[in-house]
Length: 497
Ligand SMILES: [Ca+2]
Image (cartoon, rainbow, N blue to C red; front, side):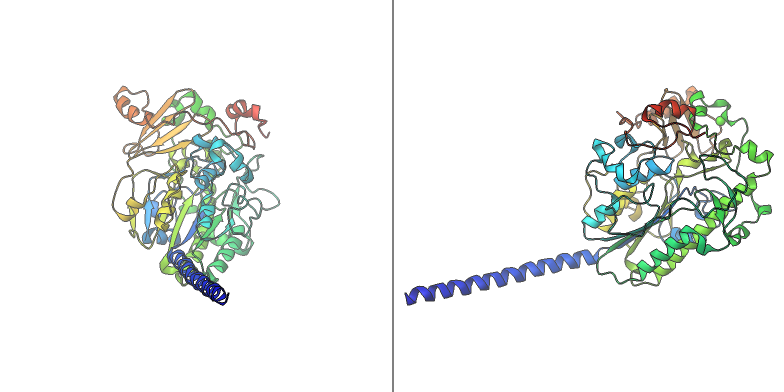
């Protein structure tokens, strides 16, 4: 019996020893996992709403003054031929955040953030970009307009909210007052402190000042230069009216496009270029847009300054992008909602500690590539549901061409494909446009019916989406014109009149 008790004591001792050793191993492994996570770079993602290529570094407009965005470009890679997957906020942002094309999800129009995961079989259970970082040990924080409305629930660990709308606004519009658009321009309000983006920048700066014990992803969604083009006086003073150059415009430009192109691009609630010329408002509208850009650039700069003074300076990826571009009188219009260059073309800058500095690359890339690229350069596992391709080889100099064109979709069945030199457009009725950017950067001369370009068209046609998804039943909003009202009325979407 005594021997038996002795044996039990020995066994207990062995059990305790084994447990102690196992726990030590576990702790070491936990610590090494933690150390591994702590080594990962932070990510600061800055989104600028409706910013076209009018930044200094892209030379999209001779008056553009964006010293801070240009500084970021000089520290990283500026993709000079980057395009959105849709030239309006809702579908563009849903595509970026899910890593899926509109033709895969059926999200061709606006959708509520909370409905994205319900939108289609393709989005079911999808991890949003910030959510994926959170699932892999990152502290995720966001402020402002990140998704179309604000932020989908659960996308961030900490979300600072979004002040609704695009205000503040004066009691009465200054120049353009039309139902169904925020479009207007002028000096308002008096102080930066009253602007929504000022508040977002302060929130983000405070987050950078905090001590972080895990790698973080901080996302700031600025709303300027989204209309209305209101900003305090000093930003208008940076862009005096007498110096404003209006963009190139050809009054007969629409004579060589197919009928459906005119129908889908009609924006009856927006000013036309002819109206702006007749009323002496064109340069003023351009000034308002430029002032809005200068304003947002100021606060991009404040965030960059804070980061540069922080302990996270050398271990943080900074990425800046816009959800799509904007026409400011080119092609007769003041609007996004198009398949042409000014609306699809976006600034897209990536600065990363491990990749090339001060580079510009003109190979076509898509904002669809953002999600897989960020995972790759942050050292996170690739997400097998991403449809884009990591741009890391371009960022490290291991490749200098993406090897594929960038595709933008507008509504159901209208696709625009941008290659190195050409843009090819195919509408839902089969009609086409083709532009040669080497000879015609304004996309004035439609070459689609010219037989000499048949082979070039063929090269693009093979990139058209195959079996595109039907429109998601979760889309909402107002139809922008008669063409789309006809297409969308069965979803209860009509025009605001
Ligand atoms: Ca034309």
